[in-house]
Image (cartoon, rainbow, N blue to C red; front, top):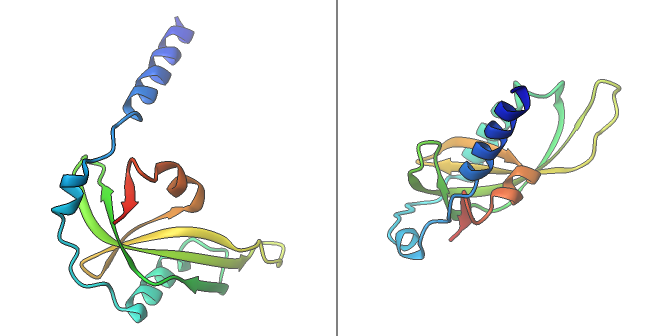
Length: 132
C-alpha cells in the first residue's frame, strides 16, 4: 500500500512537470518595458544573498546585461521580465571560496522576482522561462 501511494505521487509529479511551453504568439504579445538599472540590479541581488550566505561580505559578483525574458508563475500565468545572469563566488564555513556559480535573476517592474540556481534554471529553460 505504501509503495502504491508513493508511486502515485511520483506519477502525479512527473505528469505535472510535462507542461508544454507557451506559444510564440503569446510570447510576442508580452510587453517588456524598460530594462532595470544596473545599480538597482546589483543592490537587490546583493540584498537577496546577504540573508542566504554564510559570509556575505566575502561575496564576489559578476553581472550580465539585462535581457528580455518570459517566465511562467506558480499560478501558470505567462509574464514578461528581464533576466540577468549573476555569477557569484563566496566563502564557506571553512574560509575558502567555493568557486564561481551561476544563477538567473528575474526582474519585473524594477523588482527582483526570484533567483534560480544554474542547474534548475537550465532544466526549466524553454518550458518555464526563455529568452525573447
